[in-house]
Length: 248
Image (cartoon, rainbow, N blue to C red):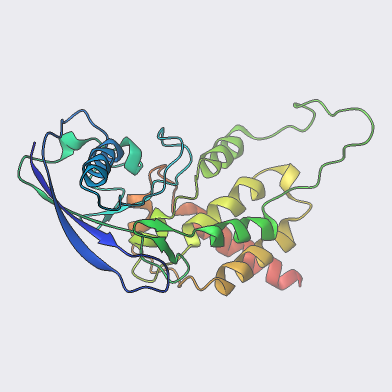
């Protein structure tokens, strides 16, 4: 398969970036998107050029670090997959593929296709924890009964890998889906009630400090999320936030 790749190249977060064009051949449909980029980088190195910098780690759809904007879509044309799980069979011989980093003020470009998503870490640090009593005997896992529906919804929210696709898909670069997932995974469980009031206030405050935009209510975030995080979490976070504000 022959392809034309149009890739964003940027030396650092201070430099002016530009799209550069690279022809590539010999790409097989069973290759992952990142394997295709590996082939390109080997080609560039052999030519004496600088390889394209992109972030990756697990290559199993777990870490979320492989986030790329592919032909205008976070993680590309497939659904419920990360970039590393996207296969080249989704493209056709002769296609032109535009590859860019996720675009958001809160996600500054580090180099080429790599972005700094530490804003998500700071939101998590603001309230994404629960109190744990480590003294005395260990409490049995089933000591506190949890409604199955609440447990299922909590686990569903906890599947968020913080890739940032929700931000990239939103025209306002909102982080509401990410933040609400992190709020929900604790708010739904009795173990998360100790810090519940302060948690949602702190995490929303930090989200705003990072420069993320407001929710647009268009639902693009849920569509592009590789883990299918539901918009219901945003509604839940809004309720939690209102309740916490009234208590304050």
